[in-house]
Length: 292
Image (tube, helix red, strand yellow):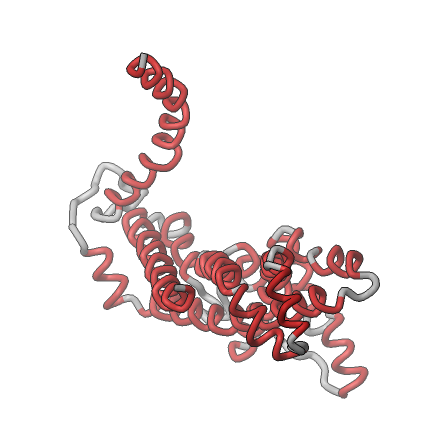
């Protein structure tokens, strides 16, 4: 009877396993295998096996990869803390004060997150336009500064792209943190209120420690998203001017689908995966000890 139940369970599990094998496991192994080859798609019959040469080339002798890595790091170090701070303060404000129009505010605030990154890119490309953009219009009208080339100036382009990322995805962090705050144990908060704890003290000593796991989850999700950011930057700048806004995923895209260097693109994809894994491990190592 037990064997029969086990066989039945395996039969029900088999379609899921086949789907995972076809859609995840096989592409993963095939991509890893390609990363050990020099494979130019224009000559598919020539595919020499070179071990870790593609990885070595990217990590030690490719200046564009280094620029893309630094740009990705800059975007992450500016965007993630900014999004976390804004989302945490707004979520706590709504959680503690419960002002009138709370539901309307929540609905409006999460709208940027619901937009496609391509739509967001097109929208902000018009807003940033040096001649007819709304931002330049206000700068010229109220500050006497006009025709600022936000996306064409190498010193401003990366910050401009980062601001778009913050504008769109702060609401994502807000949604996660606010939902987590709603499920905090009310008995602990009520006990703290009886003891006279309120305001910043309530936030610092009660809410923040209780919400650490929720904050960790939000930070991990946003870190993964930012490391593989592509759509908005592609629409806004295509990595320009020069390589001023180049990021890892953009470079991988060009290597694979513009230059047809499939081996290099595959190696770059695995480097991105390794970076994400290392960052998430560090988060769990640091934050996990504090949670424990």
